[in-house]
Length: 320
Image: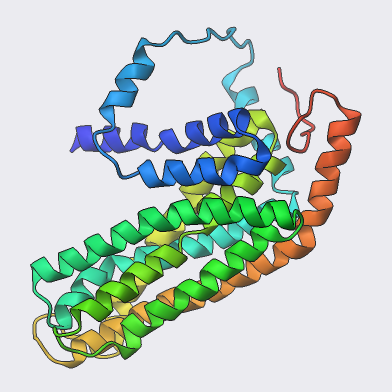
């Protein structure tokens, strides 16, 4: 158990580090594609090979900091406070927190498919089809994000986020409400789940991460993605799966029986915990159409006034 906890703890540090590295080494117009490649490879195992390769590479030795622990914590909190004053970042943060809830709720999808009448093997193969769609969707999201941003720099990425939510909700609604309650609809379900995962995963690689890397100062990118993952995934775990369980029981789900209504009850609970958060998330991406142009102008002005500030808004805190 301890080794699993430590493995998860150290593995969670990969995302903040990769966010910072991609932002520093990839041009702004191609970051969506780079983040989509990372998203595609996130589930590829084993992960130990690249870690052993990194272990063999020389590391930069940093100078020892003379500040005390309390001053370090104070500087971090001050930096976080400054970043939270960026309207676009707040919209992305709140949208990400709410947007994690549906994916936590979809952890009941295996149980839902079995209640529809599919065997464990058939249900697992349907989820495998969905995983393939997620890989393709991550790549497509990064490509579309870069293309829309090149055509409409101030509104392209926000539009991609809105499109992903609206288009992805359609096949999922069919799966949870309109799918025949029998095990004979395998092909239709496979097509719907593939379409859903292909369309619903554009936001992270094509919108969120490129905008974070553009608006947040270079020395803060890793920490910000770490904060975001902590807050968003925690809220998703709290308000996703547990709420689905409570709602399904409230609308008639009986776990110890094989009643025909169990699938409908579970589907209704999952529908509530996916569509409502995504509606709020859609509003957050809509707000970016208003906030992002102003924040982008501030970044451009900062780049002209401060030659060393290539990306991000400068933060007013003591760097030590």
